[in-house]
Image 1: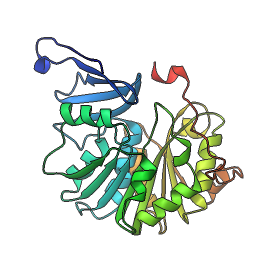
Image 2 (image 1 turned 90 degrees about the vertical axis):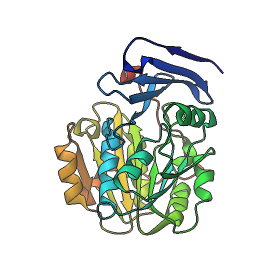
Image 3 (image 1 turned 120 degrees about the vertical axis):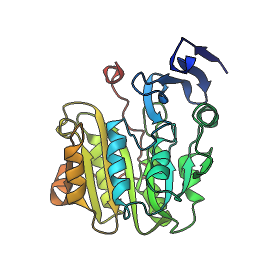
Length: 289
């Protein structure tokens, strides 16, 4: 395992941490605008941003959109049981701990080397009820007791692609099993033109959940560039009006689709099964330049 530090005067004398982890070359790059904030990159692809002084700050657009869902999953401040599939730098688990104290959370992150790096360099609040499992996301989800989770967040990328076995209807059956009555599933989905993967993921979720909403940049929804979309699913009506208001007022405003408009958006795509599932598409090189 390789590790290097570059230092300079000021800013805690730490410039960057670079280390080989199971999934590639991890870099923790300091945020010049925030004294104790860092961006995690894996093989050059941004994965997470964490501000240790302000864990409620969400820098990435898609994480802010998931943050809106977290804010609306229960009354403000109420503790929840949350499962995070994909850990990165534990940004969203830190957000839940900051905004919903006394929440109990499980983070499932396959990359044990990455978990060690993040725990060492960006330690979790010892008072936060966050358990981290270093195992495959679907295997970790299978260990969650039936009906335990108020919230399941899927943000899993091997490199810059979501593994195939986390895109299927059978995977969503496991999500449904783990969710409590009234629970919410939210997933980060990355795709670009012609949006075949995104349409298939919406169709798959629609085959397992009666209520869906999608939050994304209108440019991404029009298939004009590669980007992230946040899919929200539940067995009960979603707070679409408030989610729409929050998404529209975000620094990078997003559109919310639901109901018939979202069904029409799938264009007749078929639900994905384990037998037919493939990894999400790789982003073009220009995305990270």
